[in-house]
Length: 309
Image (tube, rainbow, N blue to C red; front, top):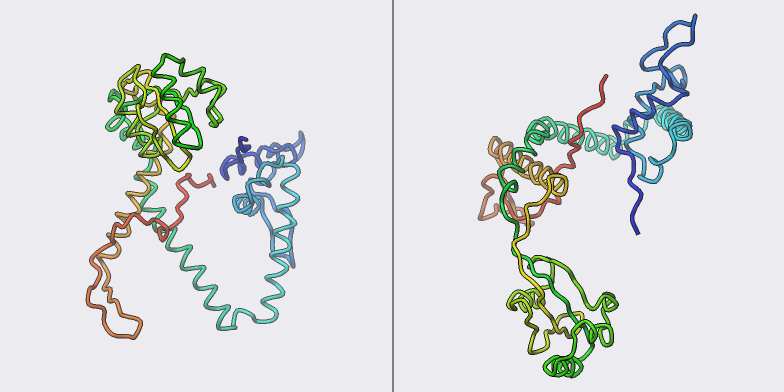
């Protein structure tokens, strides 16, 4: 089942601005409305439309799908609640609590870190950069080798060997697939269509790509799914991918590379010392940002341009 796409933060902000209830054009004879109108006040502190736009980006995806005229009251009430809680917390001087103070500082630090990375990364992940990377790595270059194959999946090796024996005697592969295969594609005669080697589990891919068109595996192929008999119906070099099919992948790779470069740069400008859990100096000290393939510690950078002020 396909998921309904949610409204990106920028599009949502634009929708809020364009909503009929928020139209910026004044009625005839009335003064022009403010570009960032006040939607509510809490103890005299104003809550602006821009505050609602910022809060919209923090909502779960399912709530971002609400129409703006339904979403705006929810956002305003949420902002009122937050401001009322802030008033109460300040009245009790919670900011003086050491644990709360540290948590507030940690949150501020994280925002500052991400803002710095955003500032460094965003200029390197532009539409022009994505287009240039596509032209360099994809355009007019052949794709990977692909195989067009059918397969029959059964539970046991003996069943697969029996099917191969029937094929050796001239049986039709698609007919046997419809009769014996437990794969969901059995009704289509076991058709898999075109696939690249990295799209299937290794044992299956290795067997399929070793075949020539018209050949089938003479011995059963075992994977975690069961036992396979594979028929190769064709081979080709895949055409170059369309830009739209890889642009998001390219953008993500550019962002990852820029983040890693930024982290390596800032680490090179500070003094880092590592210690063992017992407090003794570690024998190996870091040199720049290691590339271990783990992006879990990288900042979460939003590469969308900021809303117009």
